[in-house]
Length: 503
Image 1 (spheres, rainbow, N blue to C red):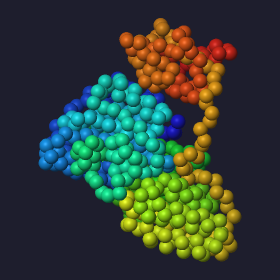
Image 2 (cartoon, rainbow, N blue to C red):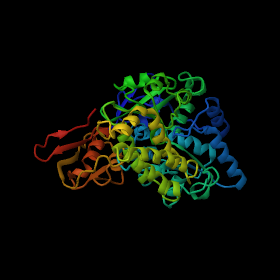
Image 3 (cartoon, rainbow, N blue to C red):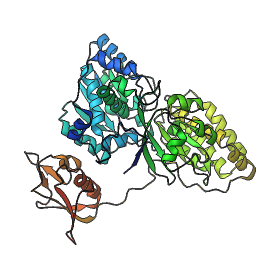
Image 4 (tube, rainbow, N blue to C red):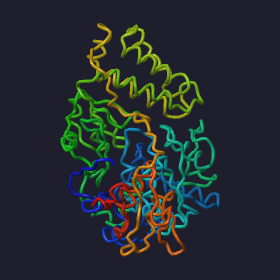
């Protein structure tokens, strides 16, 4: 489970002081009853605080909505709301955090937009079939939102690109279409589609419930409110942080028990590296990061430990990016892997001068020539590293190596191989019938182990309590933890001592 920290006050994370997950009833207690907004009200709110997308591009939300409205009127067609919760970037965990812990914030925001548009349906695209998706599906079941469905797509770096996302939802290969097609014009099933990131819809919920003035009471004048960040701590593990816009980056790093290291990656693997000096001057906002030569993007902040080889770490990610390409144009199919090979050679000291020239030449060749932004973003990631880690580059060019190790501190998909979880865990799941109230969440969280009868009460495999295979043990424990009535129990088949919810 991803660790969470915050710089006061809490907004998106409100209520998590006492709860692991905010269910439907608690969500209403904290944020109030759902309030439907007319289109003009919703647009006025979004424009007043200049609500921007939180997926990386920071596109004005109100402008997206207006484009969908205009396309629907022009074509006399229905509309669709599409929530991008795929988070294919391995270094980002904020949207997974929202889905797992406060899913109703996402759902309310999506429904606000859908009802204002008169949309046909709401689709939430995900790639992770684990706890975040299960929590999201449970929230949909809690809310009885019949017009909402979840679509699982392949977990790839490029899946979250807008065109790739629409292709995947439409049953095609989830890769960019090769030409610019705006979802607002032609998205799901060819209909005008409002496509935005999961955090964007969660922020829309807060904006609607608080009103523009209260929402803007914290943050900066141009970027009000809080935002979620994924900060990688000193031990190579992610920490999700909620912080007001405009706080010093150094303060966020200090909260996570780390510093600027030998450089800080901002914006993920299509982002840029900042020098320690620039990072210490930066503030956490689009404007603040832009002033020091970076882009905040989806809020990824990754300081690099001084004890590792920066070129080796960057080369490892460049190789990953080369393998994640859509392979439908020359810059993506040939250019990005070529840059990665040159970067690997530079890091290992093999013909370092030629390798350096290969990286620079390859980055220029792919510039603005790809069918999507993947080649440009990958090249930016690599070339900014060469600038920030210039002293290390010089050492590799003169000596072949800096002598430091590559520890894999920059996360890539597949870093941790999945264990064999087919065997019996030695645990079994039971129900305390004196407590069970038929909330039915367990049936949505671990459907392979718990079925629901016609009244919503659990029927556990094996009748009185079935053995839990290892592959379902984490799911079963989550069901125990999230049971509103604390009615589920895990027992060891050897000791029979019950394992209760971890509150």
